[in-house]
Length: 465
Picture (spheres, rainbow, N blue to C red):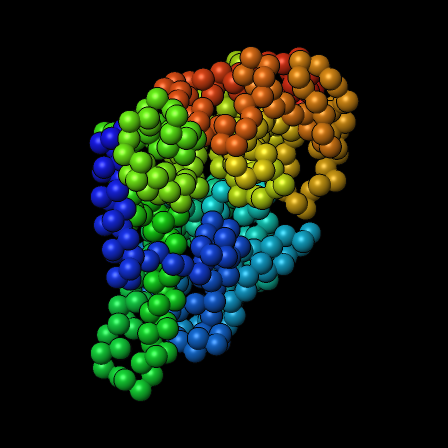
């Protein structure tokens, strides 16, 4: 502990000196809590591409189209220029209240559909409906597929549109085809590294401008600042390129000593000086170290939670006899939800049973699990099978399972006791060397409870009938 505190104080002095000299990760996108909200990313991307917005700039769209064309050689989208852009819409409404994230209308009846996915699952028939909507507008054009480009933007470069979203359409290289092998659209898989590279190219243009023309230097600096702010968000949250600049946090999470550092940090935060590990410490150094950890504690907790659930992201695990897949969630609830697991058999479905992990309040206290039937298709909430599934959740008080609204929940997860108290789950993760294995066991213990099993069987029967 003494060596830990000595190093902690050294790193804090270094960090405070840098911060006083101007080091900062201030970011307006992060301050507004929209870092991973796909609709805001779509709006900002569309805002830049739209040459009629109040930024007055055409370079954003010009660079975007040029970069796009390099992936679309020998198509009608290879040599686009800004004069080809007729409109740029976000959440463009089509039939049945469906909305295309970004729809770019071009000259000569050409269209670019951009479907943006971060954490949300694909919805049933989503891309198929978007493509068919555009095709209907140009059905009299010969080989109308040549006028449609469908872009699937996802933070994970390896993820493609689900079968559920395509329905009976299929992707073959750079084309989307129907069940009869007829071409219906060009296709391009895009990730946020692509978006970051586009932003980088735009920044370079305006950095060069800033050295040549001083008349609008403040405006140019504002453009560079805004683009860099967005680029930082992409690096921190979307492309896994973030480099820790807080010396204290970098030290605490140093790979080879991370677990011991976290235990020491937890002891400093959690206990006063009568704790055995703290008794013989210099009083002044102890107080300084405790103040540092208290100040950094929320950041430490966020890192621990993110790292733990990242280990389950898109991974297959066995819960009972069923293979489940883990997935982060974006939505905000009264309880702090972080993650869901759903059966692999429902990977491409918009209606599916799932296990949902939440914390009560904001201090990661009382971790709980729910079992529910999820419907990702907002336009299909009246689906008859979905409504039948909801009826399966009855008022029960059995095996520590309770009903709340349209789901079952349980917060007595370890030996039928609550894991409760401020930061209880954080402490459990730090102190438990087998936290991942034991967490899977918690999921198993919850899933095999009689009310959960009965509801799961009923849901399977309904959805597969």
